[in-house]
Length: 409
Image (cartoon, rainbow, N blue to C red; front, side, top):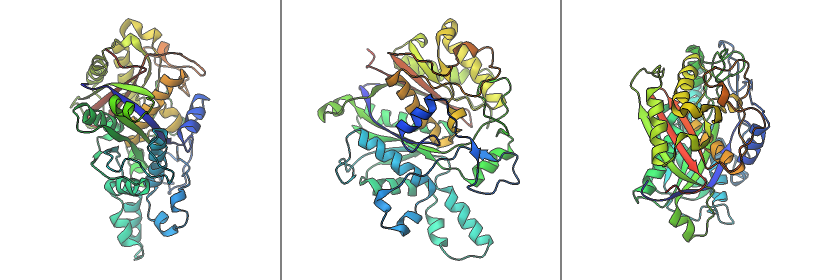
């Protein structure tokens, strides 16, 4: 990266809490959010549970029930998370509006407001004619972007990253690219995803969801847990943050993306593209694998993914693997698809800032090649210099982000 880039604000809504502090406290305590799913009918599915989030209140809509009803569930998750990030960066005025009116926005999602599209179809099939236009017009992802901008009082260039489960990391990486080339000084970046029937049933039909517990990196793993979340960061050039007196939470020192072109839904068995992306991100950050104090892995708990990923992490860390610390937080909050790369980046930053490590939950019989590195409950590693967050997506997409306490040389 040609310019020093910092993170100055963080915000998240997850199945563990309606803000980042609550989510982080529950994660570190070893809680998981798996529960029976009641957002739609699952009686014909193999799996009947997920990790749903409680919708936080939206004070700005308290006097306008119609406006609130016009917000998709995705928007109701995303607006509070974006507000928390801007507030943490000192970019909100007393009225809760952004002090930067022209604020570039890099956002990730896979389903957008698909629940409204599903509701539209149900009304068509039931021959109900009310609310048809609003549901048809407000389910696309650009509507959620507009909802966030209107609620928080900013406008400007926006880009929607829809690259499967790497999207959230790509959104943050895109923000860094904009700043690195001088196209922006400050960007709001992150992702959102709400649980929808089409996505849930789709994964269930693939037999990718677990009917038991989500067990990343366990020999007895049998599928993923679907979840929903929204997470955002404020990404700035260090010079811009210094000019306005903002205190950096950390530095973004590395970002890389690769594609393996192997299979639509399966990673390349040896994990070559994943190894490459981790090495490229570490090289951009000018660090060695041994300097990474914690790695938030993709870890979906599907039979194919975790075996390949375990081998890739072992190859990346090499002889230093026993001293590495790795976990997948999807056992706690589920796989949040387009939001995964963003919320897991926030968890990595929190580990860097606090020295607390997210535990690997639900382990019974860990995959031997990665077992020495998996994080146990209440493990800490104070003063880590660097952390990494890794995500894989359908179509062979791989992304990695490196966050550091201070800028690397």
